[in-house]
Image 1: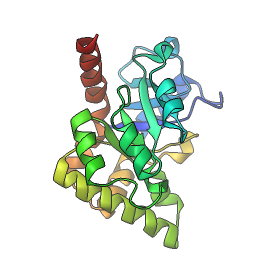
Image 2: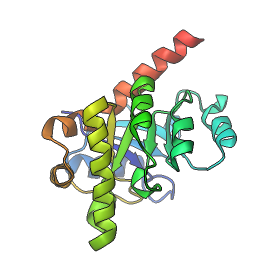
Image 3: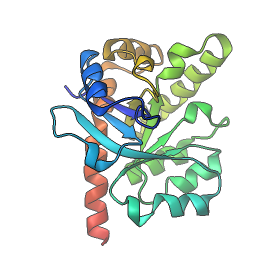
Length: 216
C-alpha cells in the first residue's frame, strides 16, 4: 500500500540528506514523499518515491499565475497556499496546480461548493495537513477540526481528490502512518478515503501530465 507524505520541507534547510530522510521515513511506514527544496538530479532511484515539488504563496492572482506557469518549473509538482474564497476560486481554474493547501489556516468560508466542483473538474487535490492536529490544543485545534470536517463534507458530495501531508521541516515533525490514520479518523475520514489520499499524488501527476500534453 502506498503511503506518501503529500508535502514536506525537509530539504530546504540543508540539514537532511536524501538517504537519511528515506531511511527514517521508511521506518515509520511511508513509501514516498512530496519534497519541496530538492533538485530533480538529487532524487534517487529507489523503492522510496521522492517527488520534487514547489510550494507557492501569495495573494495577487496575476503574480501567482506567472509563478505557477513558469516554464522553467514545468512538470514539477505544484502546491499553492489557499487564501480567501475569491482567490481560491481563481486558483482552481489555473492550469498547473496539483494541490491547494493549508485551508485550515484560510479565512472562514474559503472553500465552498463552487470550489469543490472546480476541484473535481480540474482534478486538483485538497490537502489535509495533519501536523496541526497533534501540535495544537484547545480552541485552535477545534477550529482546524471544524475546517477539515467542512472540507470532508464537500469531498463526500463531490469526490474531489485529497492528499495527506505533514508539512514537516524535520523528520521529528512526522508521525508514523498509523498515528496519522488515527488522527484523521477523528475528523471524519474513513479508512478507504485515507488509503486513497495517501496514494493520490502519483495519479495527480500523471493526469495533469496527460492533459498538458494534449493541450500542447
